[in-house]
Image 1: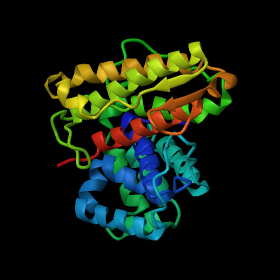
Image 2 (image 1 turned 30 degrees about the vertical axis):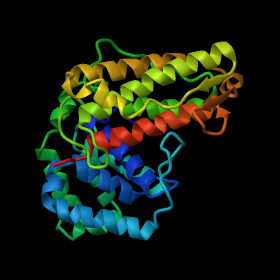
Image 3 (image 1 turned 45 degrees about the vertical axis):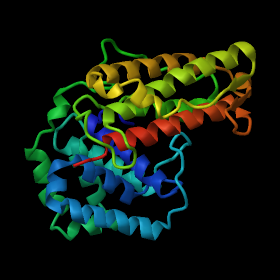
Length: 309
C-alpha cells in the first residue's frame, strides 16, 4: 500500500499509529491521521498554527477518554474511513500526474468527504479545490530522493515474511520505526518526557537492541531465558552517549535492528513459546518479550521525532 509514499508520508502513518495508541484507540481514525499530517505538512502546519493544532489534539484526547496507551507492536489497523482517505490520496496523486504520495495528497484525501478532520480544516478556509492547487504547485522535495532507512541504506534490504505468522505485526512495526529518517534531527535537543537529549535516548535504544539480540539468541539455544533485567537508564550517562556522533549512532541502531529482524523472521511459532523471565517480572513468552521491545522502540522514537522547540 505504501510503495509510492514519500518519507514524510510514511512518517505520517507512523505518527498516526502513535497518536492512536497514545489515547488507547484500537484503530487509526481520521483525526489521528490529521494530527500526524500536522506534524509533517509544512504548508498545513503554517496555515493552522501550533497552538490550534495542539488544541485539536487535546479535544481528541477528551473525546476519546484516554484508556491507557496501546503498544503499537500490536496490530493497530486503519479504520474504514481512514483506508478510504488513503485511497482518495492515491487518486489525487494520479489526477495531478504525480508519481508519489506526499502529506499534501493525504490532506486532499481527508477533504474528499465530510468528517471530523475535514470540518476542522475548513475552519481555516482549507478546501479541496484550493488545497489541490497548493499540492500541484508545491512539489515534494523528498519525492526526488529514495526512501532511506535511518537516512542510511548502503544496499537494499529484502523484505522477508516471518516464519511465524504471530510475528507479522511485530516485524512490520519494527520495520516501520527503523525506516524513519532521523539523521536530519538535532541530536542534542532534549526530550520533553525523558531527562535525555535525542542522542542519549537513541543510545538507550542501542542498549535495548543489544540486550534483546542477546536474549533472543539465548532463548533459541537454551530453550529458556532468565535475564537480570532491562538495561539501566543510568547507563546512558555512564556510557557518554551525549558525546557520540548522532549520524553514526543512527547507523548503529538501524544496523542492530536489521540484524535482530534477520533472526526474528526465522523464528518458529514453537520457539516463540519459550518461557522468559526478565528481572522480577512474571514469566512470559518470547513473543511477548519481542512485542514489548518493539513497543518501547516506537514509544521512544516517537519522543525523539516529536517537535521539541
